[in-house]
Image 1 (cartoon, rainbow, N blue to C red):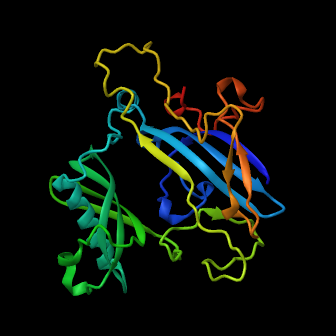
Image 2 (cartoon, rainbow, N blue to C red; image 1 turned 90 degrees about the horizontal axis):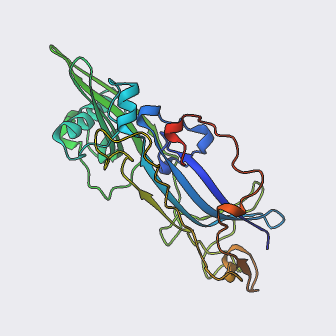
Length: 304
């Protein structure tokens, strides 16, 4: 049925939102003081002749870079730890930066859906940096800030990055927005989890299709966010303390003989297709080619 890859990946968060559907190579890794890093394990099925690429399962564990170590390197850098997103100053930074964007927009107006990230720093005064999702608004430009807030279940159309800095005399507001490509959803409301190679024809979905088309079954997976490694350490904690490992486990089966997994939904035709899945390999079973070279060499973002 193809080749099943068991992958262990050291990862860094980028500034692209998952809804943008951009390839990671087209995204910018966050600055070191703002980094979120971790490890993912994934099972990936590849069948080139039948043009199937599919993530069977994944698990990731992520955490922010050590605030304490960043502060030693850069005392004036913005705090990488997330502040309370319900803080009035955070909401003010989001609404005022979005108001600036709307005032400069020649046509469409946008409303705030959800604040996804925030940090603060002292510049010439308190400065707040925010990232938030927006949606198209039915309001007109004349209605101004009275229409900036939107229901959280609204469909996001873009991600904005804004800041609000209050100086002794005046305030400074900046904003940039990146809009997502339109995303067609399947009748069931789920995005496709089956990727196709270039040149593969799209197959109609649904029970009434003339062929036995693959259904859209999302991969099994989760993302776990852990606190900063130094959060629970005393201020005078020694640097020689052992590093905590990233607890990432991915086991579709614990049977050493493996388990047959039904993957018929990936292939055309009425025949049942079963893939033998073995337990995820341990540390001592890695490929001789791993680990590969790190693209970011800072020890602050390399899992132990």
